[in-house]
Image (cartoon, rainbow, N blue to C red):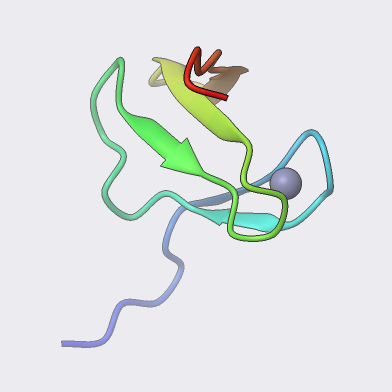
Length: 57
Ligand SMILES: [Zn+2]
C-alpha cells in the first residue's frame, strides 16, 4: 500500500521534513532525522509540534 500526501512538517531547528506518519495522538514524539531534535505533538488541528526536552542528553 502506497501512501501519498503523508503528513509532514518541517523541523523548526533545521528545516528538514519530519515524518509524522505514526504521530496521531497528543503526546506522540517525533525525531528529526537530520539534527536529532525531538518534538512532541501538542495540538492535532492544526498539527502543532513543541520541542521535547530529553534529560538524557
Ligand atoms: Zn532538525
